[in-house]
Image (cartoon, rainbow, N blue to C red; front, side, top):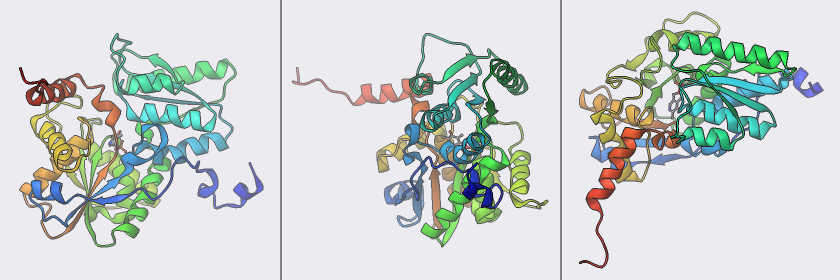
Length: 339
Ligand SMILES: *Cc1c(COP(=O)(O)O)cnc(C)c1O
């Protein structure tokens, strides 16, 4: 550890790895605003999908803290877990490449012939994938600990990064992002965000206050209110009676299922603003915003920011979303010259 690091406030800039350029852009989305029932000047998109590392996305801000701390502690190997199409796993692989650390990903599922989407990138970034089979959340966490133990026996110094990067430390990345956003949009009324493992919403709530953050649950965890609340308290360092604004109505049949409102949201964003959303997270977040405008939870005339958290590779790893997008191509295709 350098002298400078030791003198920094414990846990502050001391261990953050620089993995991105900031601030990310905040762009107006007037055509999307009108399409969903807002006024053209109301809606802005915070483009965390444009974070440069590894194809971009919100997990980079959390990894700056978690991987930074691992590196400062002398770890050689980052170990994490997730679903087969985990964006967090893909970005951990990219962060490891950037920081010169080995990466082992413990993923739910089995290797299939269809190595698509994020899995392709995991391999490209040089991560080793361990397939844990069809396991519960608890079993996946246990498998990850076993893998870390094995690595330790082999002489590596593994650091385990929790599911989705959503420890209190990781959530600090979004507390910072919230401050960054407030500088860009001081009059912000509502920031809309997808909730997966919860750290992104928790960080934003810490910076913006619970009343200005609308979280849309994506079905990745059992109890989003509890999980986000716990992280918010961890960030504050004290109990907080935060009443969170959470929508639970966009999960549908489950985390990996593509619903009609989500497919509509993906198509609307693509055709009004040329912005690509994914079927699991950002598509649900926009579907949640559309529902919120519909039932008056978000009103015209107020500044709304949609946090684009990334996830594009996941679109290419989602069979049903691909089938639907391909049929849209087929519907509009013509052959040249006309027969
Ligand atoms: C993980 C993820 C989220 C959710 O972030 P959490 O901090 O896990 O709640 C949202 N969007 C995308 C694209 C993600 O990969």
